[in-house]
Length: 247
Image (cartoon, rainbow, N blue to C red; front, side):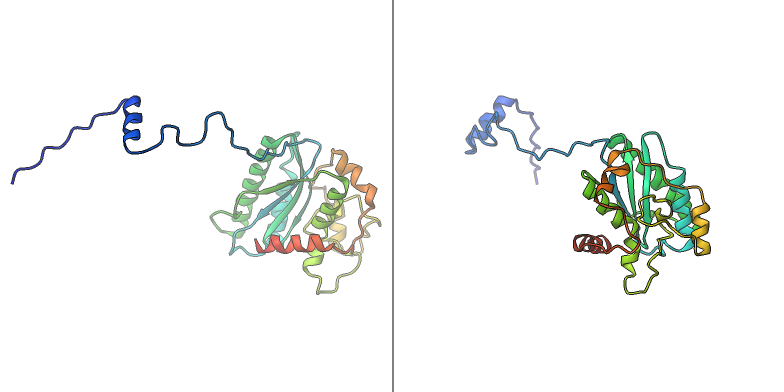
């Protein structure tokens, strides 16, 4: 049986393509009209004077990060991550995620600082837990804090988060979270009393966090009142905490 000769492929010129398309019934002016622009929502401009609330989620299957060693590892990693263009001012380690309040020179330096911190924490935590693989579930999530009220709410959310996670348990009204930067926070309405050995140890320790430099974190938020150790969390923050845990 005779085989059919294979047709040689010939590349069409642009004008031939247009003619061929017209023969197939396609409109010559099909597609988006020339001169029109697709409207995109403008990306928020990064401002150096606005601190950032950053959240890092831990992968499933890892033991609680609040257990002794991982919490100390994260605290030590934060102590060594500060740069002139990137600073961690506050933090809180929860069982499966970490909250940070940071200052950065711009979006690029925020990304670089967070990448360096995440790598440092992952390597040290994996070594301490004798495990391998990724520690963080995905890229960090950052949200700019633009007003004194917003900053105060975020400070309360981060520093008092664990108290509300264990709200069903009775905690002393002067209890502070040992897995956070609460011991080095100077915005409490009452001074921290070293009435336990672990409080005394934290207060004697060199602070792992950097000193805030933005007006919002040093002065602005105080206009709405200093924080109380057992301050109630508003409903909006409670729903936000539930969404974070479910994510």
